[in-house]
Image (cartoon, rainbow, N blue to C red; front, side, top):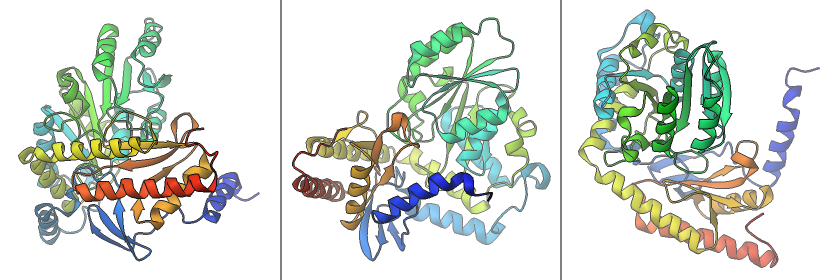
Length: 404
C-alpha cells in the first residue's frame, strides 16, 4: 500500500475536472497588472475572485512602507517572538489593531489560519465546550480539534438552535465558547450577531467572532459585523486576517479581556512559529491607516457589490445570500459550474469555482468577490460575460435549468 493511496478518490476527481478544461484550483496568473486585472493565458482578465475587497495591494504608500522596512530590517525575523524577541514593528501593528478595533489588546499571527488556531486552541481546553456554527471555515474546525475541547455544532446562523444547545450544558464543567463568522466566505451571508450576543449573555458563555471577510467591509468604519450590529462591547474575542481587505498576509486576535495577553505564553501556535516579516507588518499597519483616513473605500466597495448583485440577479442567476462583497452564484450541478467557470476564464473573467465537499449543503458555486478598486465598466463587463455564456449554454440545451 502506498502512503498516497488514501487520496486516490480525490485525485481521480481532480483529473476529471482537468479533462473539462483548465485547472480551477491551480490556475496560473502570468502577471498581476492591478488589484482588479491579471494576464491569464496571455489575456487581460478581470479578477473577481481574489478577496481584495479594498484594492490595497497596489497602494503606493503600502508598497513603499514594505520596501523601506525590508531595506532597513531585512527579509524575515528567523524565529518566534518568544525565542527571538519582538520587533518594534510587531508591537506598533498590535497597537494599531487595538486602536482601530477599540480593544485593549491585540496579538499578531503570521497568517489568518494560525490566528484561528492560536486563538481557539489558547482559549479553550479539554474541560471546555466549543459551540460552532456548522458552516465555519476549516481553520476554525482545526483550531477546535487542537484545543481538545468538546465540539458541538449548531445550525448555520440559527440563534435558536444555539440557545437550545447551550441550555443542555448547565451542569457541565469548564466554560462555553461560541464561535461564529461575520461574513461567511463561501455564500457571503452575514451572521445575526446581535441575536447571538443575546443568547451568549443569557447562558454566561463567551463568544469569538471571526471577522476575516467582514473587517474593512462591514460597519461605518469597517470594524466588522460587530460594529455594524452595534455589539462591539459585547464581543469577547475577535479574530481575523490581513489577507483580505488589508491586502497583505498575517492574522490577529483582539480582546478587552484583562488577561488576554496570557495567550502569548499559553497558545502553542503563537509560541512556536516564526513571527511575521518586517515588510508584511508595516504594510498592514499602513493599510489600517488608509482605511481610517478614507472611509469612502468601504462605500465604493458596497456600490460595486450592489451593482454586481443586481446585474447577475437580473440575468436569472440564483444568488445564495443578500448583497455583500461575496456574491455566490448557485448553479444546478458540478458539470454546469465547471462549464461556466472555464468559459468565464476564456472570456477574461476570473471567479472562484466552489464545489462539494468544500461547500455548505453540497451546493455548486461560482464565487465572486468584489473590490472597491473595480470600475463601473469592469462590473458591467463581468455581467455582460455572464450573460453571453448563459445564452450559449441555454442554446445548447433549451430544457436546461440554472437551478438543480
